[in-house]
Length: 499
Ligand SMILES: [Zn+2]
Image (cartoon, rainbow, N blue to C red; front, side, top):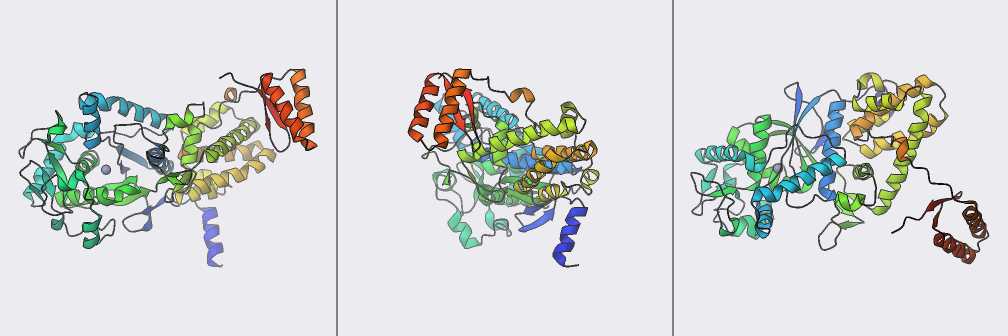
């Protein structure tokens, strides 16, 4: 049998265990819990000083799909996602608003958690905050000082000595010269402190006047933790010295994750992470997100006109996680149409499968054994695509392919089997709120006869290419309080909402 045919037949017959690209080895690796029980999964969380933008949220949505897919593979997950509630930005903003740091960050934490919930992310097992883990961070520093991997300076700061950790740079594959030139000369870490070498990074930052009341007492002086240290302290406190999978945005590979590896491994002498999982950036309408372009959209910006956050979730996972996704408003509208159509198909086939909506929703919340579900199932390709490096768009494409077949299928048994497999996939994608509840599919009120006659005349005028008359009739309908929307084969009328 030719290799390709053999591979295809393998894909069709067996459900595949989850494989994910690992940034460290640049290879696809099987995801597995090294203790044989549950997967220890750590994600760098948000800095809580402003609402998260959709670029941040995309990374968290993809991490959620990863976690759900692991769970749908029958493996439990211990998922830790931290909150950075002390750093330059939070301190500056709290001081500007004359608030204690905690009073400033609390509402942003709540806002972030609400956004995650709206986007149907499962809550992490723990969400530790940096300020609640100062003793753990101090302990790491004490160990690193004792082992000669760190040094204190006169201003009360402590630095990690990069030259004491020969494998520094392995994750990002930068050589020493590149490391020196990559370290920014910005004001934060580099020049205001007296470090010995340019690539050394701050574990602890000595107190500066602008820090106000934000400081902790330590044996080496008053100050606060450096940002990189908190992730090592909190991940190891919750999950032990070695993590199975560590996730974050691709911008964190260097220096943040490189620094996490150095300080953790120098401290414990053990491997810090088995598998690195990084998500690519988001573009908006073909451009980089930036404050000056005003395109750093929040979830509220996109849903304030009543769009379901589930549509936003769907768009955020509509491209492969390792490729830049170009977010556009056209894509948002197209996703809205696609999900509503898919939803309508489901509402038609669920009764024909002789089950009720509540049963289908139950299947979506409690995914069954995938080996049984996908064995010889037409949805097996969709499942295998998801399990091969989280190909979310490929998996969705396979689901869309089934729609036509389901519309024609008469056998309740076949429909039931497919719906069970579909429920498993919807759980993994976090789209288990589908189908939208029938009551949400509001039918438009019927237009009075006079309006219908005008609309019909307009359609005829358009068909005769008399666009001037068609436009006049559209305006006249609008003046009478009705909007007309054309599609390829006809038109629909809906009442204009008063603004
Ligand atoms: Zn981190």
